[in-house]
Length: 179
Image 1 (cartoon, helix red, strand yellow):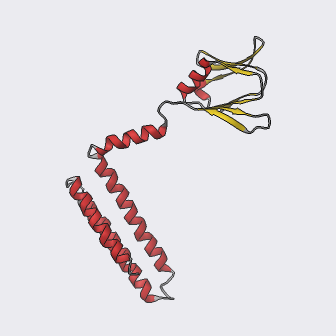
Image 2 (tube, helix red, strand yellow):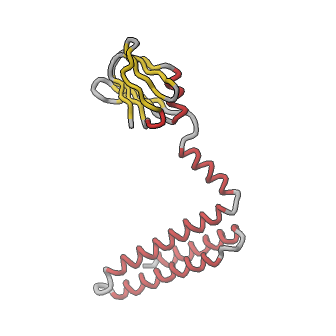
Image 3 (spheres, one colour):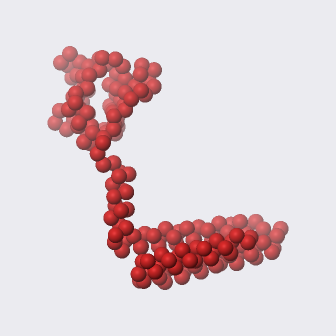
């Protein structure tokens, strides 16, 4: 939900809500909890620093629009956004065993996708180029076996697992380069 302020007036916070007033008359009031953004369009609209702070604390951006509706400025929270929180969680996971689980899942997904792509490409060459079809299916099978082998490294120390995965990655790159 958004709040559009397009008439002369003032925007201020009031107990978990944003209030729009014009000459002491309440024009609109919206709970911060439901707001996704505030749009201010037009001239003569005042916004208090308390309103900016309330929006910033709630992660609500404030956009200023020209009379034609073209944005000319925006205010965003300087606090932690979802991206920053994600990066911090990734850094924390790096020092724990969780990083191995995530890395293995990413690698397994990559290998499975490569094998599936090779099968897909091979499917259209089965009758037109049987040799190429056989070679593609063989490489896809090797990729799949690498994936199964990586699953077996689950309990081993993560550095050993990583180095093994990198070794297999290089071997598979060399084998697919000849197609």
